[in-house]
Image (cartoon, rainbow, N blue to C red; front, side, top):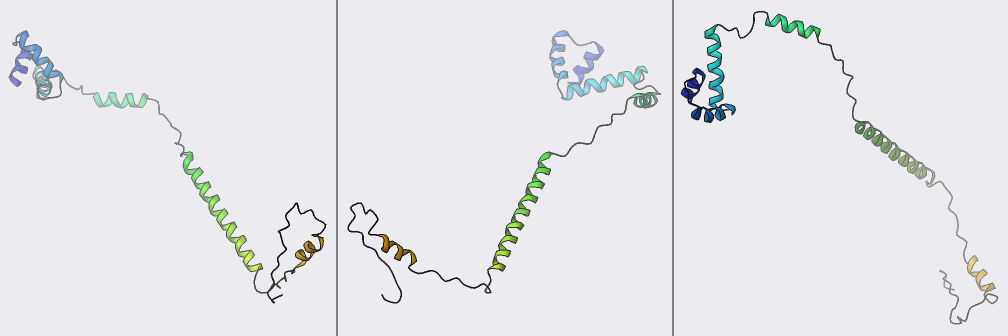
Length: 151
């Protein structure tokens, strides 16, 4: 393959073979590498300067002329800040609920007097007024009560 590339550069290769070689050179393989290497060798032998002596100076001058781009600092995504505030709100809510529950437990300690439940006030009222209320034909309904002392 290298012989064919060398012959093509020297102009000694026929057109039929050159067409196949051009396709190979367009690729990224050995033929393309040989093509670049042979041209570099030819330039050096002929004395063609690859880089001029003031190449670095010209490059530095071009860089000096180029405007400096000052880009603003990239903003942090809003997801992080919103997540921070949602976590902070959740922690605050849990602390508030815990504080309220603790205060209620402290207020309902053993020091509070117990309240006695009124017994049979509602059932006496119902029995006293049952004769005046319309029963709607439900004669089988009887009043019932429960007492712990066996009455």
